[in-house]
Length: 379
Image (cartoon, rainbow, N blue to C red):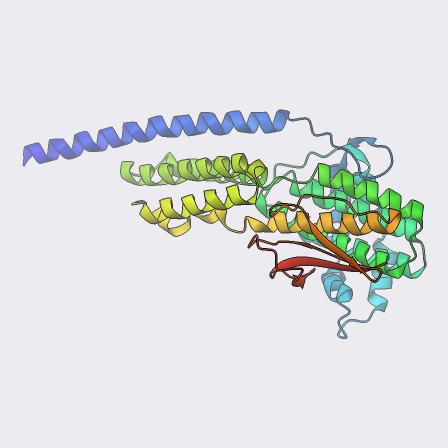
């Protein structure tokens, strides 16, 4: 009996010491990576005009603060979808009373740097309202045939979305992508109106090309995500019984490894990301750690969304350039190979393979993820 007690005590001490050593390595790694991110140069190109000194997030914050307390701003999405339940006059009133939010947005987009607050859990409703108000304003500008002002605002909305997606966790990346997609939909509408001049199209072409060059990295968003997760979980890993600590530490170590593997695989293309996702799913299925079983694959889910958004950006670039010059860009498809296109009877149909990586000959839609991601254009 005494021998069993000694064995249990020794095992517990060994487990506690092992947990301490592993946790110390994690803490050092997390702090080192956080220091690297904080020291990173926050400057990035602007999508139009000349960059102005300052940090865009100071202006973005003012834009969000203008709209966050406005109760009626909750109806902006319904106004955009033209819901019969909402009086369109509300949109005019919101623009008249709170249009200064868009002035802040455009000043922020023109700043030379983009470095956000470390408060990654803050309420983002104000940012959502800013994006929706910008889309609403762009429609009013299009109706007034103020095409340059309209496209300038939409490029600035793209800058805002990109800056958000590039500075926070994966949730921010999702929101930033949503804001950019909203801008792209409005741009496509402007193209269809036929009102844009050649010079306006050329300026938009340059802006979208710059956006493509500085497009947010999904792998980097996951790395930021896991750093935030680590900082929240470390206190739990520091307390409790030894075996419980080891479970949490193993769970955290694996998440950090997976985020790193995704970031390293991202430049290799869609097939490489899919390979990593399959490996992770197999590893999690074999794991003895119950925490791994519950959510070990969270960082390899929805890997296609960032690439689907970038495919839409490149299809829009193809449309704008074609309307401006009559020439077709040869652009890489984020899902493999090159973007496909066919011109017939003065109409252009262009498409991406989509997440299945199979060319369905342009069978699909622009707004929804289905087979191919398709953009149809009548010049």
